[in-house]
Amino acid sequence: MTKCGVIEGYRARSLPWNRVKLELTRAQVQELLCYDPLSGSLTWKPRPLSMFNDESAFHKWNRKYAGADAFTSIRNGGYRCGRILGRYYLAHKVVWFLHYGSWPQSHITFENGDRADIRISNLKAKGENVR
Image (tube, rainbow, N blue to C red):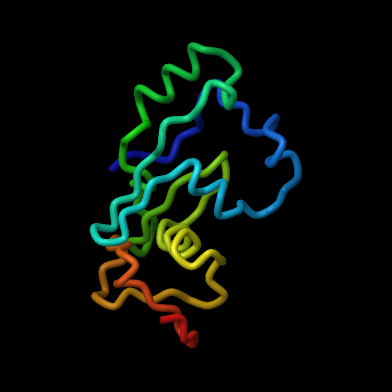
């Protein structure tokens, strides 16, 4: 597992949709991440040059992260976590958001007890009838 890191040369603050501290939209997350609900695979998509300060940072980031597993750090308690544009998120909450289009309003439980298993079929909102 890798540590969550800061992306050098990435200009998240200069992006129009990141100037105000707002929650990410589903479209923004879909632009950055690829999720396979059957396997639970969450990977980084390649990012365009317009998201970086210079071409060197663009090539460096895409060589290192594009197509690589995302949210590979494990937090206390076994939860997968990672950063999107410099802000920490829990993987299972990002997966819920990608699948259902809204952030979970209650605690998410893992049907098989494995907090690293982020297949949507393994996630259930406590007290919500979503499925």
